[in-house]
Length: 494
Image: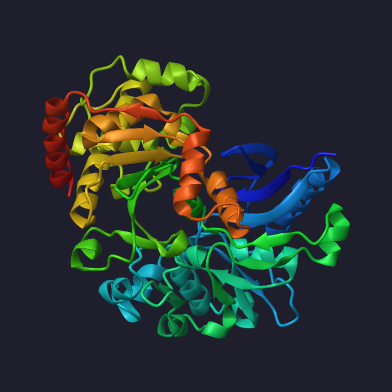
């Protein structure tokens, strides 16, 4: 029989999910994917929902698989995307599938809330969270405004990872990192703000006890034990927000680093000991989200590979399908012919992304990209220049010298963009791990059961477990000149 003890991580994204097992052996962490599955949005009429029961069923399937393989599971942890939540009725049952953050019911809710309830500045001064229409506070306000029947009957509100843990254990909690995405939490107190809750028709009793990553939620219920063939396995609150788990896995040697979680969205930030909430952070729309061990993830969202993903979908089979060919051809075209601001509102959700990029270039009097290679080169150049802008802002806020930029997530495998990022920022870039979220999830579980002492031992084990790729700055003068062009183009577009 295999006597190795494994940690079971559930890692759920907005399009797909995975169950993963990990163990620590000889100072290194090892991961193995157990199951992978789609996370499908359900559309009915104008509403979009997540299938919480399907996600729960996939967790059960993964647990059955490890039971069939006679693997000894030490504990279980769940991380997901942020902001979304489940309503539970007085009978202890889920009232309906949760609304998804892509649901259009929030499109006017933020402006309505900010016009009639709290101003932008008032809300930011309490929460330190950047304003996005899909944040939980605006979802809940939209539901209150429409007299949503599920909300009116709700006795409990559980953020998605907490809801799934509750379905496994019967115990409800409110995990800090996922709650911090809601724009309902005051990072100074570490609690949900009663006055903000009242503005959306809720109170503190609707939410479970606030817990930090590493807290045991409970053990598998007898029903789950019977379904899976496992025993009373503990379920721990990890950093329930997937970015919180990913940042916990940054393989940094000391505090003097910034991180770039690179994927559909790029999130660039620093780790701070307390929230940074002031006029400058408000002006630049930076956000303060909860991290492990009492840290704050002070970061800014950047529209990352969303631009390319949308273009690829539009191109279909008319362009090469493998990234190596796509990117290789893009590197053959002239650099900096066309520059865009990736975070311009034009690129939020256009009917045609390729045409939106071309239109931006027309408006700003630049070369209009022709063909997929020029479009991709424009995206890569522009993303790197935007990274430089945000990196320079981070240097304003940091009370330390940022010596290294760690790139984690799927984008850490993009050699060209990683090199451009080093060129643009002028700082050493270390790329990896790609599987940051699962690693962070598993390492928080390992810390909870006493296998590691703190975040720095976690990070050392992760760093020792993989080969990081290093990039150093090249052609600094060229990048500085084009950064100034970028600033001029962004100012011209307005």
